Length: 106
Image (cartoon, rainbow, N blue to C red; front, side, top):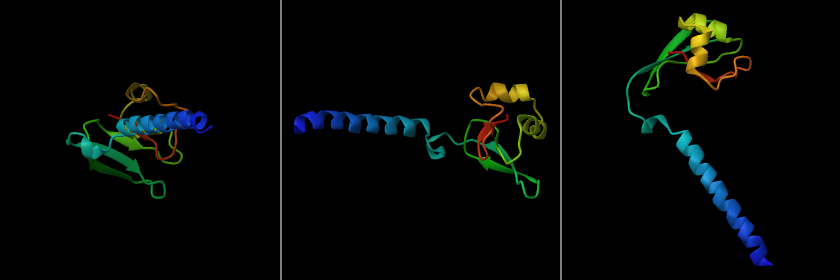
């Protein structure tokens, strides 16, 4: 009886460990990336003021989606086009932006 339960249980444990390892590799922390300068622009919804941060990544310029943002408004604020935002973010759903979502703008 124990052997019938042990094999599937061992498989589930190994599969879980594999998934955790893959997810951590895909979500590597900024401290493991080469340090160069990029700009992140965010807008505070309460005041409507934009702020710019410097980060240690080589990926370009990013924007954090705020409540009420659309790709059109983000493109306008960033000095780019919706088409360019879609090129820079191939996996983004333009009609389902999420608050806090990080999208590349440059």
